[in-house]
Length: 192
Image 1 (cartoon, one colour):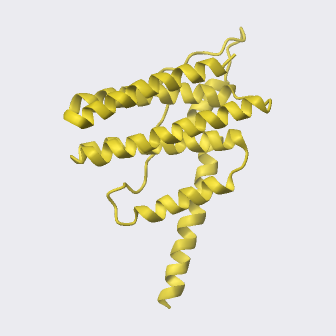
Image 2: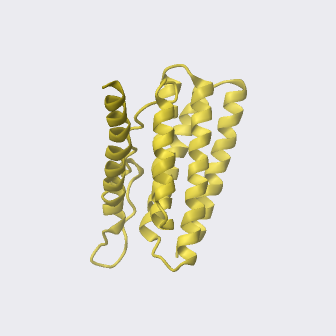
Image 3: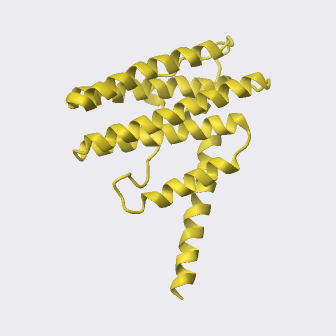
């Protein structure tokens, strides 16, 4: 009986978030903002406050975090479209940003900085997939606009975390801030 309950729990943890992640990628509030145009054909510039960051779920300090990591890797493996993969990587980067912020609030600065750094790695992978999608002739305007909005949120939160940190953690966060500036430059180069 225990094995059956455990198998059901694992199945539930793997399937339910996949459906939720696909729903989030297709109907994010920022995509509605970016896709809208005025009557003059000019896309309005949304305020950074309109970009909503996702809830991170389990934090890296949870003993069950490995299940989440396994699930995320499985989902990543199953997505092959470069544009969808870029969106998924952006979602993972945003989740890790929020998780890092929450860990800093708990006083776990080293773990928070490590989580943030891993999130920025997802951001980098997402940019690579965005470049790949553009080479394949896909329309990347909506996704690249969300990347720019996300970068602004990342920069604001990282700046706040730099103010809260000291020593080596502060130095690593400053390196992350420089990395974000490079990401912003790369995304802007992709846009028409």
